[in-house]
Image (cartoon, rainbow, N blue to C red; front, side):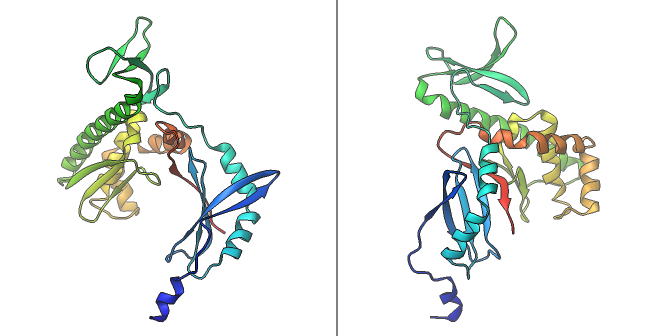
Length: 262
């Protein structure tokens, strides 16, 4: 066996360890990665899962020591995570930045639609049986996100005399959008929860990468041309972006940008 292959082979290792901090016990999932250069801690929202990445030459003993050393960081980050907000009757959910209350209309025709009640409150109505609410709301939001993001991306691409190859909407966890070298633009569907100017900024940001695959001064000049209001959108994401990751979650997690790098 080649010597470099031996570097990544390990006997059976525990998948999870436990650390104690201030009287509380925290499970930490271990993840070995051949490209990691150091031990890294990362938190997932909703499941409150703690993940510790181990570099190729790292050991479980060192990983345990690293996790114990940063028990306070783990406790503090978990304490600041927003609670999960599964799609259910009565939930207040932002749609294009406007709070809507989910209203279950079991016997109504259709799937999901918006309306306003007698008191002027925006509603996001969903028909059918209660077990289908989560899936139907999720499908509706993804469709709306794809429609808005496709329209914005194609419009910005036309302004630059370019063509986006494809627009993809996913539940991206560590970034709001990305642009591949082949011209495929990918976005988080959760942008449909943010105010419209935030979604517009992300579309402009990724379309600008069709010109500059970096974040150089030239890149930001392209963004400024497409979206003069981009600074306001960036500030909104910095302040409120993490909150969007809690919606539609029950026992499934989404990564957030909370990590410890020694």
